[in-house]
Length: 483
Image 1 (cartoon, one colour):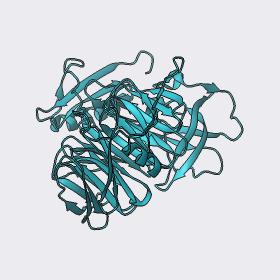
Image 2 (cartoon, one colour):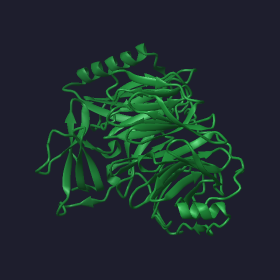
Image 3 (cartoon, one colour):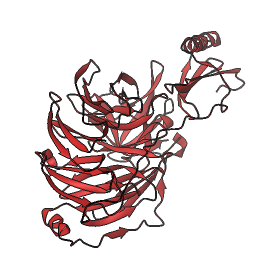
Image 4 (cartoon, rainbow, N blue to C red):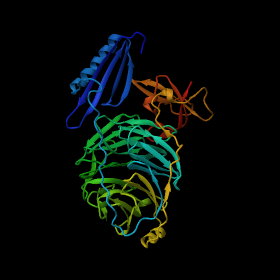
């Protein structure tokens, strides 16, 4: 802000009783500079700053923005008087399993809070809980790292090599570097239920049955309202976005150009999974249904004994796994034949993933559980022989990595380390974007980069950037300020 600047601030809010909006819009004029801040009521929100040739033009631009918002129903308010809207957290119950045998659990890690998020890749297992903790472990259960996010973790999703956590604060955090950063800030009127990211495009399903699509620069692309509410399923690929809700599953064109198909399911959808040619919907009416991605036709039905909280498959859908509200886990052949049912030994699985003959579950008691899903282990378990589950302990000295909220919080370097890449913040039509300045990269492509640490003209050093098919770059490794 210029020294001695005359400053005026106008603060507006829009809060509707039906829950469709609960957001603020603030415009500050300081001499020739207009700063706009907007977001969810009670949150810090996003900030945009524009400099004008004269104060008169700055005041006129601010007045135009205020008038536009006033026409949309925004009204003057006092910051802090209206409370933030409570986010929806999934209400679940968990009964004891009716299975006669318990699953062969190899190890169990208790996170300390109810957990929904899970991702398992070639090297690590990731679990996120309602306390905002995200832990990474190796496949044998050793705890490697801990991230401390500002709010509860709704889900963990992967997009190629990048891992993202969707949180109750309305932000999606990139966990691919040492310090997490907010890669997306979802619209203030969206109550997130589930997320998926494909080629940098974020797809959000919400409480009202809505679908919101946001690009890699955190800019809204399109939105739709499906034929049901409580949309707990969202999956995406090159062909479509698959949206599961209380009325079934709806497939939309990736560009928002319309609907491909809609298929009612046997009960409201509580969880979704996808393979190359099919999507799997776990429902409240005790089934998992496999739907063709091309036509939406129901190809197979897998019947459980309780409401299905989560499901997954082995590669290609050869085996289908499901977990119900009664702490049981199931395995089916691809045609729907039930092969086994076992108790989890510790709550109902709210999410799951299969990898290399192991089934990883996150349960209602906040545990990450590794189950030996090999044929030999399951056969032995059905006969009453199971291994003694190893209880994984968290190292007391393991620090929690919190998001960087300002450029000053980053480590600084005076010169560019060998092999690193330099990116720079640039003004582009009133938006502060980030572009690569190192030779060998397309200078017109923008970089997906945390908004909280962007400063005009600032330069940063990153370990690497990788091109995505959507025509942008994503950061790999640490972010440091270049002095």
